Amino acid sequence: MTKTAVEFRQGMIDILPVIAAASVIGLLWGTLAASKGLSPLETGLLSASVFAGAAQFVAIELWRDPVPWFFLAMTVFVVNIRHVLMGASLSRHMGNIPSGWRAPLLYMMADENWAFSERRALTQPLTMAYYLGLSLPMVATWTITSVIGALAGAWLQDPAAYGFDFAFSALFIGILAGFWKGPKTGAVLAASAVIAAVAKLTVPGAWYIVLGGLAGVLVAVLLHAEEEEEAKATP
Image (cartoon, rainbow, N blue to C red; front, side, top):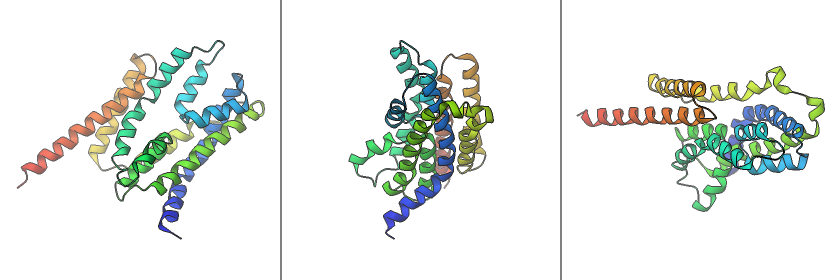
């Protein structure tokens, strides 16, 4: 087996737990889309072209006749603005990937494959084969299960009633554990969690996602600067 094939297979193996969770969430979103009047085709096209679970759930909650396009677009923009930070971070590890491929690869970026890619970059180079192994199964699973959910909406009813909607949250907590490097990691996570929680209670809309992310980034930058100063001071 070639190195490329090995890398692709490893990406698929790593993403398998995410696929299981994404299947349930995709079914749930497809069910909601059908309840708002979207056809299975429209549901599948929306999932394939947007590929952003949180944004799609927000959008479908706002979906009505007539569709408030401007308000919907601005709300989705706020929810997805974290992707700017995530994309900037991930781009740092794409130096060995041809520049023409980076935009299509970043289109497939979601919270979960971003986290796996960042964790991978801590120990070895991020390759295109590994990233595709993570991403292609996610896009395919999300799109297919959305369509199935739209087709079987009446039968599935509400998967959230069984707690299935917590699957992604539990999974992402497990992924974050792989980033743990001691108290400084805890400080970053705590800052992000506290600011996000306060913003959720005090700021309308989905700005808590952005503010929590920015708080975590700010603390990480400050801690990194402190490490550099300590390194310079050490003879």
